[in-house]
Image: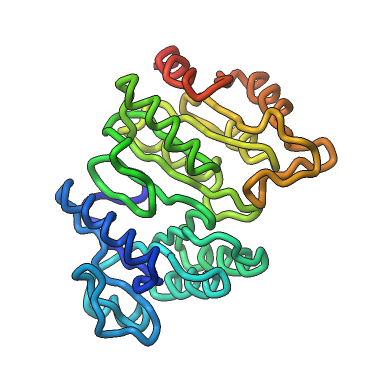
Length: 288
């Protein structure tokens, strides 16, 4: 529980769109099942007075906060509006923004994340599946049926790999404390380092799985700073140079950021690296 719990009130921006409405229903279904608050309000400019699955809709986050107590927002807005939506959340005093939206212009992301930091607002994403603390809170689009409560943290750049490895952990009897999808864009709010710092201070978390991919050096930077036992899995062994692989940040440039070099550097730091997702539970068992 490093970003929220049952008491966390959530506002969904882009609430009346297809994705927003669909995931409001799923987030509140999960909240009801664990006795949490879930989504208390939605925001879509010009749609105030409507309801989405029983959740009242407002024109702005400030309007929603006049009627509801909330500390987090989840974004399902179009890419061109996402930067402004992040800044609106930060300006209104929310402490957490989960940006699901992909294809946000990089300069918009840079501006919005910088503004959020100045306002003590934490941004997860963009281009991410959100986070889930089993038995407590779901913020985003993760499939809750795969998760079970426990003591293993997970941080990932890839949504689908997150679900696969969480399923492997659950099948092996290794429940999760919190699972965070940090996003696959070149510029993101929370990095491996940031989330590992939170996990190291969390009494519920005994070890962490980091799920990385080609591009950049966020995985190595996180491993250097880790004050908690970690296991890694790096996707993209066969990724060709100079070709983007799915995520905007997943590109090998100038011989840097390829999977093999990442794996070698992590192993040199003493980090166990799984060759395939099914190996992760065994490596975790060896650590704890």
